[in-house]
Each structure stands twice: as C-alpha cells, then as structure tokens.
Length: 111
Image (tube, rainbow, N blue to C red):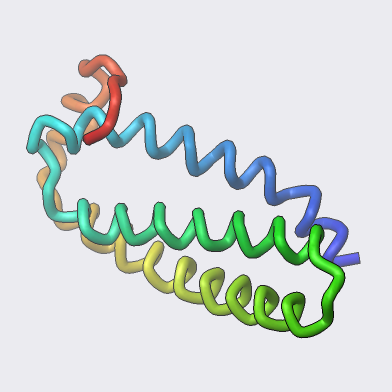
C-alpha cells in the first residue's frame, strides 16, 4: 500500500519541486538570496537522482540493478529530507523583507 501511494504521489512531488524552483529562482538569479544557493542546488541534484533511480526501479528487471537503484533511491531520499531541513533553516536566517521582494519580481529563467 505504501509503495502504491509513493508511486502515485511522486509525480506531484516533482511538480511541486519545479514550482518551488521557478518561484525562488528569480530571487536568487539577481543575487538577492545567496545563502541557500548551495543547499538549493544540492536539493535539485538529489531530486534528479531520486527521479532517475525511481524510474529505473520501475523499468529494470535484473535483481542486481534493482537492488543498486533501490539503495540509490533510499539514500538520496534520506539525504534530500535532511538537506531540506537545513535549507529551510538557512532561509529563515535571511532578512524578512524577502517575501515582499519575491512576489514583486517576475519569474524568469534560472542561472
């Protein structure tokens, strides 16, 4: 049951990650927010690894490869959760004026 929910929720999570990326990208591309840039890029890399390994788990049949990708998926998911907490903590230390700044900017392409 939990695996079924995981497989069904994963596309929505990828959509949410893309939405957050677009929402915060315009703020970070002009140098307004540099404190969380490294952890944010690390989160993006981990999401890419999670998506690729999750897809491979569904597509591959060889037991050895499935085991390797299962470990990669589990480790990247755990690292993602830990880094996400750190990323939010870094973001909380920034100036509170950022919310009014963020919504006044046009969402553009990321660096």
